[in-house]
Amino acid sequence: MPKPQEAFVLLPKDKKIREFIQSLVPFYLGEGKIDEAVSDVKRVELLKILLDANPPLAAVLFDFGKPEKIDLQSFMNRNFKFNVSLKRFAFLTGRSLSAFKRDFVGIFNDTPNRWLVKKRLEEAHFRISKKHQKATDIYLDLGFEDLSHFSFAFRKKFGFNPTDLGKNTTTV
Image 1 (cartoon, one colour):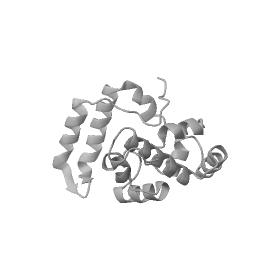
Image 2 (tube, one colour):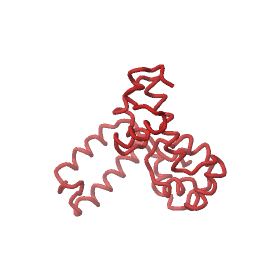
Image 3 (cartoon, helix red, strand yellow):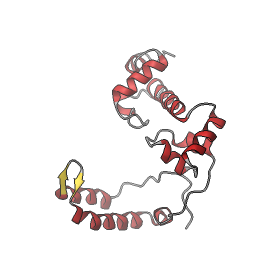
Image 4 (cartoon, helix red, strand yellow):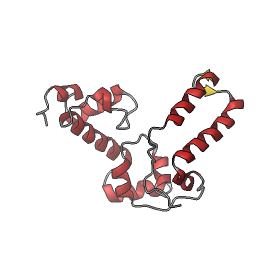
């Protein structure tokens, strides 16, 4: 089976997945941990559900080889919103962390961290000003871990708060 070209595979809403998640609730011990005796069985169950819903996932889930080096520029432009580490981005593009950083600077003339923040903030500005979305609704979708960090970074880049932009969509 061919491998998907994207780094992340979106799954359609599925009743079995929703019910699987609900079936985990009785086994939680608190702090996001599940009873270890049940976890192995539940992992196998989830794997079966995912493969039934999307058989081509087998090509992804059971390929333990190193990914091939892929086009870094198009990959990053498609996946900048995801909150993953640089080490993970490097792996997903088939590079070591040092090669990823070196290739990245060569392509984008910026460090990966600065570029990611800039790109996410530009997307946030677009969504708030043109799509009339609220900062509270988009910051997680754009890879920011908390609203205060997002607001601080937005204000630093644009000189005003994201909520100010939402009130006055003519601000540039």
